[in-house]
Length: 471
Image (tube, rainbow, N blue to C red; front, side, top):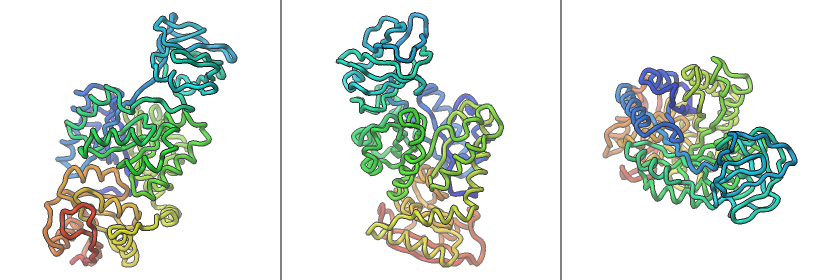
């Protein structure tokens, strides 16, 4: 069983998709990676979903990726005496550390670190950016603000601070507990929220210590100032357009998305585009035309994956949302302009043997019209370099490491297969033919390109390219 598309689908699990039957339906409809959102649900809930996915994986024989998405620090206002207030434009409003319930003149903001970072003129966005305050005067435990955009503000609404970098770790105490649990049950990817600086990624990498891939969610404008360093440290990235779209002007988000996808492609790092992709399908069996175009744009840009959030987690049509996303991807990938765009954006190979072999494999496969490119990999690095080339032929990744196979489920164009290790190139060629036949990629007379590294089992040592004919 293999997909008829290269761009992958990530789907969030939640109340609408917690049953074994629905998870199976979502996989059959096209999900490649399942997201467990640690902002919601208990550890027992997440474990139950993971066990269903692993059972499904065993029954289908297809490696399935599982992404644990950590909540990150959430900044919220405290409570109000009457549960909510109406803020009028131009009014004065105070934020402070006082625990007394608020009113129309002030409210508690129980985050001392916010006041350490605020400065005059900084914007404070409330309730997903619906309300806006401007700091007029601030100190160690307060901020006097002017209401720029008013409206109703109720208890514990979220706060966004687009103009300042906060002295906060991306990992809260809850995140650290969730992280150890997620790694203990064997997730394949860990998504970091609220990343502002390279040090946030380095800290998480140290804690994860190779037990899962590190996926950085780019949702803070401060992170964009360090994009190259963050891409270098991360194993994968996500354009998290929810908070990013709150903290940046909406007109800037498409350009930022394009830049992130482009830079990740150049670096050979998987990149996911997420949030509100088919938002109307939470309540409707069909998306808007604008949403279909949004998904298509991410695919045309060359993203490795597109993601469903509430559509699959809490919506009324989770299976239909996955099916629609898959159909949009297939339609785009059959457009001749898609291949033209991918070829135009191809990165120049780095001066390494692995990149030279990967580029040569793509060129040879195109020249000879190969039915597949087979990569042997332990760590996944060989396959990532091949995927960076965005070849027209499918990529079949053979690995003895199940964790590697599952992580590669996120990567553009990759169909991963777990198989016993090989000790010689002749054995590798024989197994490549066997696996391509078994997985339905080839028929008699077809050609395949095979890349591998000798000695076998050495991470990143791709140094051989061979063409085989299917007998």
